[in-house]
Length: 209
Length: 128
Image (cartoon, rainbow over all chains, first blue to last red; front, side, top):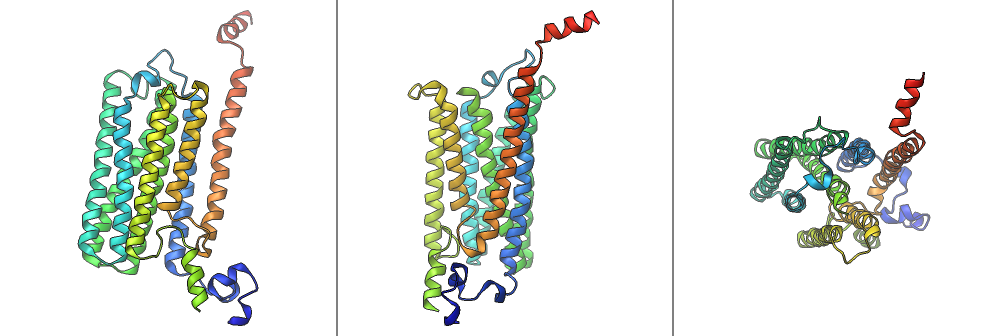
């Protein structure tokens, strides 16, 4: 082993050349596959962002972005998602230590923050539709509801997934398969937070600057 | 084998596969940085402290910085050998996202620029 250590940097990190390492562990492969899915998901969002960037000014005489958005509500929504990203990380640490009670606790906090986020978003949508600024009012509002609504749908799916994972920890225990799924969930949840950074910068703060 | 362990230890993203306290600290650091950048974004968007036309650029910089913080501290993207494929596919993803967003914006603004104003268009249709 010592004779091949100084060949290349990739070999130095493990001591074994790439060609002799064999298949990567399932943990790495599963995370990589899910990472590819997340990137394709982000490309979907990029198309919706492009639509919003093009149509954001086309209000057709209807209300414009700056008249509709409530900045305080956006601060709350952002805070909820940021905090839930952190609690999701805490859940991951508890899972790696095989502490079921802590995993449940952090999963509960994560889901609760996600639900608060969804409630805030839903109340915002309801207020806008009530004001006559529904998705059919103008191209700007169609693009807005599609972009922010798709993100909200992802958060909803994430909460459902988290609920299922909690149930699987309860029934199946910390099997490698269950842990891989929890790792994928945490990747999904953190990626949604990254999309939200784009949403609040482009949609909500873009209106005020 | 000792050297190998040391390299592997320093070659990891913050928070991945280390002792519990270290990981909690790195998540806390990530959260702190993210909150700081978010607060800066919200403050910048409505401040008169920054020169008006430069605010969108500032917001973009803050958003990209925060995405980087999330990638490193929460998604554990790093230079570790385990992460090479992830970094390469991320680079490709960023490339496609850039093409889609900026390509659409350039094409649409070009079309808008070349289109006749709506009243002239109506006149032309009436003359036919």
